[in-house]
Image 1: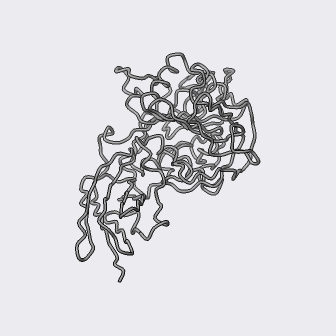
Image 2: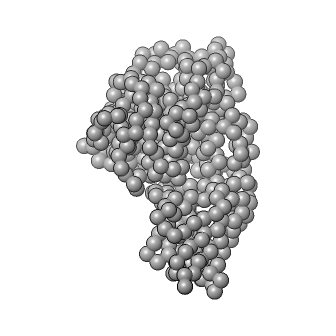
Image 3: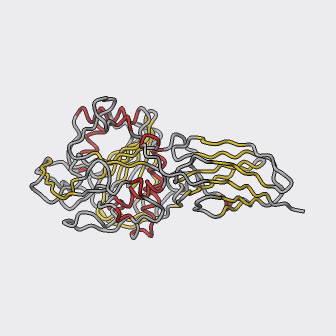
Amino acid sequence: MKKALFITVLIFYYPFFNCASAQVKILFDCTKAETAGNADWVIDADLHNMDWLPNAMVGTGNESNAQHLPSPAQTSVTSSTAETYWDGALSAWAIGLVKSGYWVESLPYNGHITYNDGSNSQDLSNYKVFVIDEPNIRFTANEKSALIQFIQNGGGLFMISDHAGSDRNGDGWDSQSIWNDFMSTYNNPFGITYDSADFSQTTSNIPNLPGDSLLHGPYGDVTEMQYANGASMTLNPDKNNSVKGIIYKTGASFGNNEVMMAYARYGNGKIVALGDSSPTDDGTGDPNDILYSGWAQDANGNHKKVIMNATIWLAAISDTLTLVDNLAESNISVYPNPSTGEFVFKIGGNPLPGNIQLYDIAGKVILQSNPVFLNQNIATLDLKNLTDGLYIAVISIGETTIRKKLIKSN
């Protein structure tokens, strides 16, 4: 007779840490004219009094002026909080990250991109991921050095470009040229070059990579992407043999040309490269700009999936989060999920004593147990000090290993 094993994971509510250092921190850059022209690549701005001619000027314009911390405070974000809680075209991205347990900040227009500078409270050494969405001011030599050191020492850089000619502050540099200038300083360390291109299309030309963390990550499987005036990339594995294209133009072969999204490892860190800023646009933000909802509406919601998967991969210490949600390949089910308290794993068949591990969003093991299966086939794990957010349960039963995303939500 078949038996069913119920593994009950008891999660007790514990509020978000007030101390930001207890969470994985993600920084969004606002120093490189990301709000110039018809652009608003910020997570939140309470003021709209900026101009870029071509550098930052306060009080002379009406562009978004992002502050260090979003307002209202992210400690008040719950599972039901709408992305309109904050005012910025990247607010949906940021709210999603906070709901998953991350801490988000902006580097304001007068901030400094440094690495290991103890005098800078927003030094990159304090963050796990740095997002730069369509920079329009060239990086200085010191900033380039800070970026490359950040990545070499384990940081994650999300590089987002836009189409050729997208020079929004009129200084002669568009985002493609700026990114290529940074990478050429170090002899193309990531094996990626942005093409001088401008095209729009929806593509489903995605390679079959079932174990890929970006295409099949915690936020789901990615099946398409829509560009609204973006640039492709050319890959050079001779410069970095880890570089990998994951989304391609329609009709392109899965090689080194006509790539729309790619990633690579460098030193102890990682980078993700995207050739269009439109997929990150949630359609809200600066009332003086014309914004579009590329985040959730375009590509049937796939932009949110791939961008969130990519951010989590950049933040993860290991690749533990790869192939989560593979319960469909087993006889295990879990409910309810999300949950405010109790997750129940139902395992059919004749289970064997195994191992349960719980990972946080950084890929660190925060709990490990070898449960003793009782007659009633129930094992409980008491997790009293968890914050709301995203966790990965890894269950080993005999020779089977199952990964499942758990969302603890108030």
